[in-house]
Image (cartoon, rainbow, N blue to C red):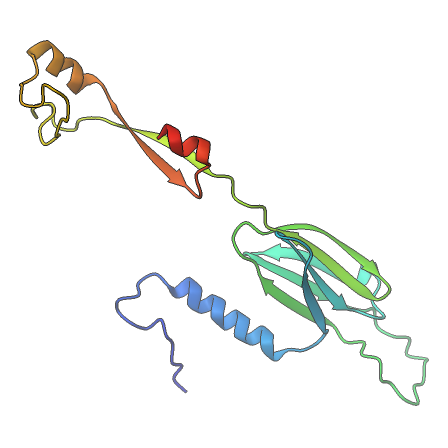
Length: 188
């Protein structure tokens, strides 16, 4: 059977990571054990709660593997001497994976009343402003070529000493990553 993918266009190069990510998400949606809730606790905090009745701390594991939160449970084998007339409590092993967005951090996990709570946080990115120095790559280029001046001497050619100093002086370019605070925006 041929699998149809939305990423098989020749114009979408390097998106195989997203295709694998979508495959993983599709596989996890098919499995419904154990049931879980995802709740938002604040602007940046989440909590995943799994119903793991019958599991102890030693039976459970929480880890992060390749940007996935992996929660697993494996109970020790039952006593072979016990005879069940009805067995309705699931005692099977499980592994549930949640794909984490970039920057998500696991704050902690705790087991209470048969519920495993895993707390996550995604801190808001702090705006970063970096100054990038621009230097001339062409030593023979005329300084100021292609630069318009709005001063009173706009038509006058720079003197040789001033032109040499202007060519050696590096220019600065402001590159903002994320939202720029108002105080920083006025400086640029």
